[in-house]
Image 1 (tube, rainbow, N blue to C red):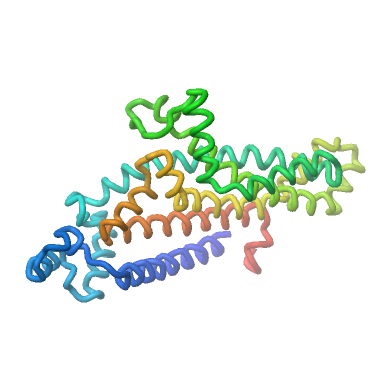
Image 2: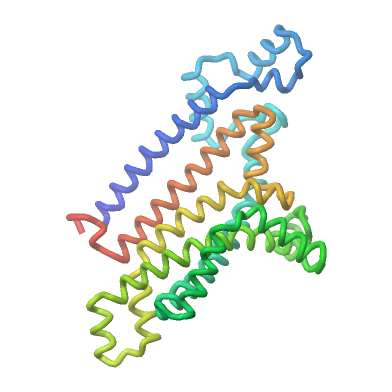
Length: 315
Protein backbone atom coordinates (compact mmCIF):
# COMPACT_ATOMS: atom_id res chain seq x y z
CA UNK A 1 0.00 0.00 0.00
CA UNK A 2 2.90 2.38 0.76
CA UNK A 3 4.33 1.88 -2.74
CA UNK A 4 0.89 2.50 -4.24
CA UNK A 5 0.54 5.76 -2.28
CA UNK A 6 3.97 6.93 -3.44
CA UNK A 7 3.09 6.13 -7.04
CA UNK A 8 -0.16 8.07 -6.79
CA UNK A 9 1.65 11.03 -5.19
CA UNK A 10 4.11 11.09 -8.10
CA UNK A 11 1.22 11.07 -10.57
CA UNK A 12 -0.49 13.84 -8.57
CA UNK A 13 2.62 16.05 -8.67
CA UNK A 14 3.15 15.51 -12.40
CA UNK A 15 -0.52 16.25 -13.10
CA UNK A 16 -0.37 19.48 -11.11
CA UNK A 17 2.66 20.66 -13.10
CA UNK A 18 0.98 19.80 -16.39
CA UNK A 19 -2.24 21.51 -15.29
CA UNK A 20 -0.39 24.70 -14.31
CA UNK A 21 1.32 24.84 -17.73
CA UNK A 22 -1.96 24.31 -19.57
CA UNK A 23 -3.82 26.90 -17.46
CA UNK A 24 -1.08 29.50 -17.95
CA UNK A 25 -0.81 28.83 -21.69
CA UNK A 26 -4.57 29.01 -22.29
CA UNK A 27 -4.99 32.22 -20.28
CA UNK A 28 -2.17 33.88 -22.19
CA UNK A 29 -3.50 33.10 -25.66
CA UNK A 30 -6.98 34.44 -24.94
CA UNK A 31 -7.78 37.81 -26.54
CA UNK A 32 -8.04 40.91 -24.39
CA UNK A 33 -5.74 43.06 -22.32
CA UNK A 34 -6.19 43.78 -18.62
CA UNK A 35 -4.48 47.18 -18.89
CA UNK A 36 -6.75 48.21 -21.79
CA UNK A 37 -9.85 47.01 -19.91
CA UNK A 38 -8.90 48.89 -16.75
CA UNK A 39 -8.16 52.17 -18.57
CA UNK A 40 -11.04 51.97 -21.03
CA UNK A 41 -11.26 52.28 -24.79
CA UNK A 42 -10.30 55.96 -24.77
CA UNK A 43 -6.86 55.36 -23.19
CA UNK A 44 -3.79 56.19 -25.24
CA UNK A 45 -1.41 53.41 -26.29
CA UNK A 46 1.28 55.01 -24.11
CA UNK A 47 -0.92 54.86 -21.02
CA UNK A 48 -1.87 51.25 -21.75
CA UNK A 49 1.79 50.32 -22.23
CA UNK A 50 2.78 52.04 -18.98
CA UNK A 51 0.11 50.23 -16.98
CA UNK A 52 1.00 46.92 -18.64
CA UNK A 53 4.63 47.48 -17.60
CA UNK A 54 3.55 48.31 -14.04
CA UNK A 55 1.48 45.12 -13.86
CA UNK A 56 4.27 43.04 -15.40
CA UNK A 57 2.15 42.10 -18.40
CA UNK A 58 4.95 42.97 -20.83
CA UNK A 59 7.37 40.43 -19.39
CA UNK A 60 8.15 37.21 -21.31
CA UNK A 61 5.78 34.34 -20.68
CA UNK A 62 8.39 32.08 -18.97
CA UNK A 63 9.22 34.90 -16.51
CA UNK A 64 5.55 35.48 -15.69
CA UNK A 65 4.99 31.75 -15.24
CA UNK A 66 7.98 31.47 -12.91
CA UNK A 67 6.76 34.45 -10.86
CA UNK A 68 3.25 33.00 -10.66
CA UNK A 69 4.34 29.53 -9.55
CA UNK A 70 7.03 30.85 -7.22
CA UNK A 71 4.58 33.19 -5.54
CA UNK A 72 1.96 30.46 -5.24
CA UNK A 73 4.47 28.15 -3.53
CA UNK A 74 5.16 30.95 -1.02
CA UNK A 75 1.43 31.55 -0.52
CA UNK A 76 1.49 34.83 -2.49
CA UNK A 77 -1.01 34.68 -5.35
CA UNK A 78 -0.33 38.24 -6.43
CA UNK A 79 -2.58 41.28 -6.80
CA UNK A 80 -5.83 41.47 -8.72
CA UNK A 81 -5.59 43.85 -11.67
CA UNK A 82 -9.24 44.88 -11.34
CA UNK A 83 -9.61 45.07 -7.56
CA UNK A 84 -6.07 46.17 -6.70
CA UNK A 85 -6.07 43.85 -3.69
CA UNK A 86 -4.37 40.52 -2.85
CA UNK A 87 -5.92 37.59 -4.69
CA UNK A 88 -5.64 35.05 -1.86
CA UNK A 89 -8.30 36.73 0.37
CA UNK A 90 -10.62 37.13 -2.64
CA UNK A 91 -10.42 33.42 -3.41
CA UNK A 92 -10.69 32.43 0.27
CA UNK A 93 -13.86 34.52 0.68
CA UNK A 94 -15.39 33.01 -2.46
CA UNK A 95 -14.38 29.48 -1.52
CA UNK A 96 -16.04 29.95 1.88
CA UNK A 97 -19.33 30.07 -0.05
CA UNK A 98 -18.65 27.55 -2.84
CA UNK A 99 -17.18 24.79 -0.64
CA UNK A 100 -20.13 24.58 1.84
CA UNK A 101 -22.53 24.79 -1.10
CA UNK A 102 -20.78 21.86 -2.81
CA UNK A 103 -20.71 19.85 0.44
CA UNK A 104 -24.43 20.40 1.02
CA UNK A 105 -25.28 19.51 -2.59
CA UNK A 106 -23.08 16.40 -2.47
CA UNK A 107 -24.55 15.26 0.85
CA UNK A 108 -28.05 15.66 -0.58
CA UNK A 109 -27.10 13.81 -3.77
CA UNK A 110 -25.40 10.97 -1.88
CA UNK A 111 -28.28 10.52 0.56
CA UNK A 112 -30.89 10.39 -2.18
CA UNK A 113 -28.92 8.29 -4.64
CA UNK A 114 -27.68 5.61 -2.25
CA UNK A 115 -31.18 5.00 -0.89
CA UNK A 116 -32.86 5.19 -4.30
CA UNK A 117 -30.18 3.17 -6.11
CA UNK A 118 -30.22 0.31 -3.62
CA UNK A 119 -34.03 0.36 -3.57
CA UNK A 120 -34.18 0.18 -7.38
CA UNK A 121 -31.62 -2.64 -7.51
CA UNK A 122 -33.58 -4.61 -4.91
CA UNK A 123 -36.75 -4.24 -7.01
CA UNK A 124 -35.26 -4.72 -10.43
CA UNK A 125 -37.90 -5.00 -13.14
CA UNK A 126 -40.72 -4.03 -10.78
CA UNK A 127 -42.76 -0.88 -10.30
CA UNK A 128 -40.39 0.66 -7.73
CA UNK A 129 -37.44 0.24 -10.06
CA UNK A 130 -39.35 1.84 -12.94
CA UNK A 131 -40.37 4.83 -10.79
CA UNK A 132 -36.80 5.44 -9.57
CA UNK A 133 -35.32 5.13 -13.06
CA UNK A 134 -38.00 7.40 -14.50
CA UNK A 135 -37.36 10.02 -11.82
CA UNK A 136 -33.61 9.84 -12.43
CA UNK A 137 -34.18 10.31 -16.16
CA UNK A 138 -36.19 13.45 -15.43
CA UNK A 139 -33.42 14.66 -13.14
CA UNK A 140 -30.87 14.18 -15.90
CA UNK A 141 -33.01 16.10 -18.37
CA UNK A 142 -33.67 19.13 -16.14
CA UNK A 143 -31.01 21.89 -16.39
CA UNK A 144 -29.90 23.01 -12.95
CA UNK A 145 -30.33 26.72 -13.83
CA UNK A 146 -33.98 26.08 -14.80
CA UNK A 147 -34.53 24.16 -11.57
CA UNK A 148 -32.87 27.00 -9.65
CA UNK A 149 -35.28 29.55 -11.17
CA UNK A 150 -38.25 27.25 -10.44
CA UNK A 151 -37.15 26.86 -6.81
CA UNK A 152 -36.89 30.63 -6.44
CA UNK A 153 -40.38 31.14 -7.87
CA UNK A 154 -42.01 28.44 -5.72
CA UNK A 155 -40.17 28.59 -2.39
CA UNK A 156 -38.91 32.18 -2.30
CA UNK A 157 -41.50 34.22 -4.20
CA UNK A 158 -44.74 32.27 -3.66
CA UNK A 159 -44.25 30.44 -0.36
CA UNK A 160 -41.63 32.81 1.14
CA UNK A 161 -39.90 29.89 2.87
CA UNK A 162 -36.37 30.75 1.73
CA UNK A 163 -34.45 33.80 0.51
CA UNK A 164 -34.44 34.41 -3.24
CA UNK A 165 -30.75 35.22 -3.32
CA UNK A 166 -27.83 36.91 -1.66
CA UNK A 167 -25.53 35.71 1.09
CA UNK A 168 -25.50 37.29 4.59
CA UNK A 169 -22.06 36.00 5.58
CA UNK A 170 -20.95 33.38 8.07
CA UNK A 171 -21.27 35.76 11.02
CA UNK A 172 -24.95 34.76 10.80
CA UNK A 173 -24.57 30.97 10.38
CA UNK A 174 -28.26 30.01 10.34
CA UNK A 175 -29.16 32.64 7.74
CA UNK A 176 -26.08 31.68 5.73
CA UNK A 177 -27.09 28.02 5.69
CA UNK A 178 -30.63 29.02 4.77
CA UNK A 179 -29.32 31.00 1.81
CA UNK A 180 -27.51 27.88 0.53
CA UNK A 181 -30.44 25.43 0.78
CA UNK A 182 -32.14 26.22 -2.54
CA UNK A 183 -28.85 26.42 -4.50
CA UNK A 184 -27.77 23.09 -2.96
CA UNK A 185 -31.05 21.47 -4.05
CA UNK A 186 -30.67 22.90 -7.57
CA UNK A 187 -27.17 21.44 -7.84
CA UNK A 188 -27.76 18.22 -5.90
CA UNK A 189 -30.81 16.93 -7.76
CA UNK A 190 -28.98 16.54 -11.07
CA UNK A 191 -26.01 14.87 -9.37
CA UNK A 192 -28.39 12.56 -7.48
CA UNK A 193 -29.95 11.45 -10.76
CA UNK A 194 -26.55 10.46 -12.15
CA UNK A 195 -25.38 8.77 -8.95
CA UNK A 196 -28.65 6.85 -8.54
CA UNK A 197 -28.16 5.12 -11.88
CA UNK A 198 -24.51 4.33 -11.08
CA UNK A 199 -25.49 2.95 -7.65
CA UNK A 200 -28.22 0.77 -9.10
CA UNK A 201 -25.90 -0.71 -11.74
CA UNK A 202 -23.07 -1.33 -9.24
CA UNK A 203 -25.39 -2.96 -6.68
CA UNK A 204 -27.01 -5.13 -9.35
CA UNK A 205 -23.57 -6.35 -10.38
CA UNK A 206 -22.72 -7.14 -6.76
CA UNK A 207 -26.01 -9.01 -6.28
CA UNK A 208 -25.00 -11.46 -9.00
CA UNK A 209 -21.72 -12.38 -7.30
CA UNK A 210 -21.16 -15.72 -5.58
CA UNK A 211 -20.60 -14.17 -2.14
CA UNK A 212 -24.16 -12.84 -2.17
CA UNK A 213 -25.59 -16.28 -2.84
CA UNK A 214 -23.40 -17.66 -0.07
CA UNK A 215 -24.58 -14.99 2.38
CA UNK A 216 -28.22 -15.70 1.57
CA UNK A 217 -27.62 -19.47 1.90
CA UNK A 218 -26.22 -18.86 5.40
CA UNK A 219 -29.47 -17.22 6.45
CA UNK A 220 -28.56 -13.53 6.07
CA UNK A 221 -31.72 -11.48 5.48
CA UNK A 222 -32.18 -9.80 2.10
CA UNK A 223 -32.02 -6.30 3.58
CA UNK A 224 -28.88 -7.09 5.56
CA UNK A 225 -27.26 -8.68 2.50
CA UNK A 226 -28.04 -5.58 0.46
CA UNK A 227 -26.62 -3.02 2.87
CA UNK A 228 -23.85 -5.02 4.57
CA UNK A 229 -22.53 -7.03 1.61
CA UNK A 230 -23.76 -5.75 -1.77
CA UNK A 231 -23.38 -2.00 -1.22
CA UNK A 232 -19.85 -2.11 0.31
CA UNK A 233 -18.67 -4.22 -2.61
CA UNK A 234 -20.27 -1.78 -5.07
CA UNK A 235 -18.55 1.28 -3.57
CA UNK A 236 -15.59 1.50 -5.98
CA UNK A 237 -17.52 2.91 -8.99
CA UNK A 238 -19.80 4.90 -6.67
CA UNK A 239 -16.90 6.61 -4.91
CA UNK A 240 -15.20 7.32 -8.24
CA UNK A 241 -18.27 9.13 -9.57
CA UNK A 242 -18.82 10.95 -6.27
CA UNK A 243 -15.26 12.31 -6.36
CA UNK A 244 -15.76 13.64 -9.88
CA UNK A 245 -19.16 15.07 -8.98
CA UNK A 246 -17.87 16.96 -5.95
CA UNK A 247 -15.12 18.52 -8.03
CA UNK A 248 -17.70 19.47 -10.68
CA UNK A 249 -19.88 21.07 -8.01
CA UNK A 250 -16.99 23.32 -6.96
CA UNK A 251 -16.14 24.25 -10.54
CA UNK A 252 -19.52 24.11 -12.25
CA UNK A 253 -21.75 26.20 -9.99
CA UNK A 254 -21.25 29.42 -11.98
CA UNK A 255 -24.80 29.59 -13.36
CA UNK A 256 -26.51 28.64 -10.09
CA UNK A 257 -24.36 31.09 -8.12
CA UNK A 258 -25.41 33.83 -10.51
CA UNK A 259 -29.09 32.90 -10.27
CA UNK A 260 -28.93 33.18 -6.46
CA UNK A 261 -26.40 36.06 -6.49
CA UNK A 262 -23.94 34.10 -4.34
CA UNK A 263 -20.39 35.50 -4.03
CA UNK A 264 -18.81 32.13 -4.77
CA UNK A 265 -15.83 30.97 -6.77
CA UNK A 266 -17.80 30.65 -9.99
CA UNK A 267 -19.10 34.20 -9.77
CA UNK A 268 -15.60 35.51 -9.02
CA UNK A 269 -14.26 33.71 -12.09
CA UNK A 270 -17.01 35.10 -14.29
CA UNK A 271 -16.40 38.66 -13.11
CA UNK A 272 -12.64 38.26 -13.51
CA UNK A 273 -13.05 36.99 -17.07
CA UNK A 274 -15.20 40.03 -17.87
CA UNK A 275 -12.51 42.30 -16.41
CA UNK A 276 -9.68 40.43 -18.20
CA UNK A 277 -8.23 39.88 -14.71
CA UNK A 278 -6.15 36.96 -15.94
CA UNK A 279 -4.17 36.42 -12.75
CA UNK A 280 -7.35 35.88 -10.71
CA UNK A 281 -8.73 33.53 -13.36
CA UNK A 282 -5.45 31.58 -13.48
CA UNK A 283 -5.46 31.11 -9.72
CA UNK A 284 -9.15 30.17 -9.61
CA UNK A 285 -8.79 27.63 -12.41
CA UNK A 286 -5.61 26.24 -10.86
CA UNK A 287 -7.33 25.92 -7.49
CA UNK A 288 -10.18 24.05 -9.16
CA UNK A 289 -7.69 21.76 -10.90
CA UNK A 290 -5.95 21.10 -7.58
CA UNK A 291 -9.27 20.22 -5.95
CA UNK A 292 -10.12 17.81 -8.80
CA UNK A 293 -6.68 16.16 -8.70
CA UNK A 294 -6.64 15.93 -4.89
CA UNK A 295 -10.13 14.42 -4.81
CA UNK A 296 -9.16 11.86 -7.43
CA UNK A 297 -6.11 11.01 -5.31
CA UNK A 298 -8.27 10.52 -2.21
CA UNK A 299 -10.79 8.45 -4.18
CA UNK A 300 -8.00 6.27 -5.60
CA UNK A 301 -6.71 5.58 -2.09
CA UNK A 302 -10.21 4.85 -0.79
CA UNK A 303 -10.92 2.47 -3.67
CA UNK A 304 -7.56 0.73 -3.17
CA UNK A 305 -8.34 0.31 0.53
CA UNK A 306 -11.72 -1.22 -0.33
CA UNK A 307 -10.41 -3.45 -3.14
CA UNK A 308 -6.73 -4.48 -2.73
CA UNK A 309 -6.66 -5.72 -6.34
CA UNK A 310 -6.55 -2.09 -7.50
CA UNK A 311 -3.12 -1.62 -5.92
CA UNK A 312 -1.50 -3.73 -8.64
CA UNK A 313 1.11 -6.47 -8.26
CA UNK A 314 2.66 -4.73 -5.23
CA UNK A 315 -0.52 -5.33 -3.21
